[in-house]
Amino acid sequence: MDINAKTKIEALLKQYPFLLDFFISLSSKFENLKNPIMRKTMGKVATLEMAASIGGLKTGALISALTAEIDSQRGKAEDSNELAYAPQDQIVTGPKERREALKEIIRDLHNGEDMEVLKQRFKELVHGVEAPEIAKIEQELMNEGLPAEEIKRLCEVHVEIFKEALEEQDRPEPPLGHPIHTFMKENRASEKIMSDISILMGLLGHPPNPEAFAEHRQALGALIEQLSKIDIHYTRKENQLFPMLEAHHFTGPSQVMWSIHDDIRAHLKQTREAFAKNDPVQTVTSLKEAIQAIRDMIYKEEHILFPTSLDMLTDREWIKAKEGEAAIGFAWVEPEKGWPQEILAETEEAVPEPEEILQDVAGALGLDTGRMTMEQINLMLTHLPVDLTFVDENDRVAYYSEGPERIFPRSPAIIGREVRNCHPPKSVHIVNKILDAFKSGFRDTAEFWIELGGKFIYIRYFAVRDANGYYRGTLEVSQDLTEIRKLEGQQRLLDWG
Image (cartoon, rainbow, N blue to C red):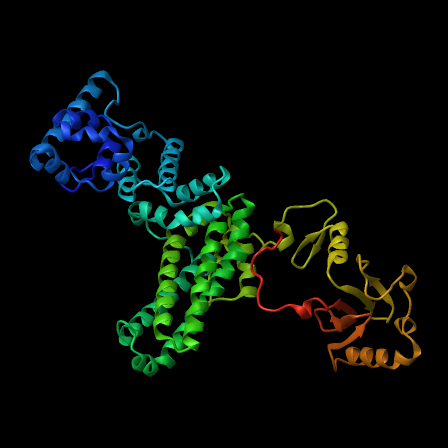
């Protein structure tokens, strides 16, 4: 630890607890240091220069005396083969001990310890920390009961503490076309947009001038809309990367980062709303908050999340992630060509189908986007807040959902029945018209809404076609919209009480 005139008393005593008695021996004015509250409060701000003045000593003499005492204690420790001069949490001998030391630093941060003290402890005690370790520490803390929201609140300071060690590590360099490469390519694109926005905001003045805002409004609006596409980047992380990490019981990063994603979305929404109201001050304020949060997230991604993910996930899992990317889309860029063809050529391994990667479930059926048992399918269909009836390509009723509150009565006797016989004669012509339009390809949907028994009922028909476009039947969906039509405003919080 470098000891100089600006060294804080608390940081020094935290590093070398034995100096407390030595301070008091130098001057009776230091008796107050025996009070732990005094050490926690005044010690956080008091420097050695200030202490020397209080104790009636010269700063250089105080520093020399303290340094000599530390050397003396170190010599005694070496002679007795003890580490009497070192605080207990300085003894870090392996990965497990290092994790515990890091966790202790984060716990102290949670308890309000001074940032500078903790930075110094980290610098002195633990060297060469790797990104996966930080992610694992936060996961362990969550497993021990620290809420995700609390981790999120502390996340900025965690990164601040570990930043110097992380800066020593290179950003990951995944192959072209790898999902992480695409994420990082999007980060570079977002940085260009944020740089352009910063230049433009500089032209608006400080505080932003209404006339300059009007002059540059069109260009600024276009850049705000461009930056808002970062939502696609985050959505892909949330739906592609996070589920794979969670499959490894690694939930901490996803819970914390998802919450920060939502904060960024909120900043951007506030920016767009202020911009629409021609409010230059609020537009710039919200935009600066969004940009800072996005830049911080890029740092967390490329120094913690991405290295951890590359360390944890297999090529097989990354191939699965790549298969689902296009369904969500990309922000500003397209993936490069190359991966995974290069590894498939080396291993001659076929790209696995989604159901091959999912955990096998006894009796499960392979669906397009997952696997479910017959029981799960039945439960899902009967718990939907709608009535479903399916008529096959031969115009016979093949299925209806048996929910707790059906809108229209059904009974097992209609299964296999010709659908025209399920309607009164006066409406058969409408049934025929719908079926003919669906079969010919002229229409794909038909909808009706009626008031029945004091309820507002919405009825829709959908043509069901296979992958080749052939008609395979009609789906009827009926829903009671009575209560839904009464909704106003927003309800964003649970109201269970």
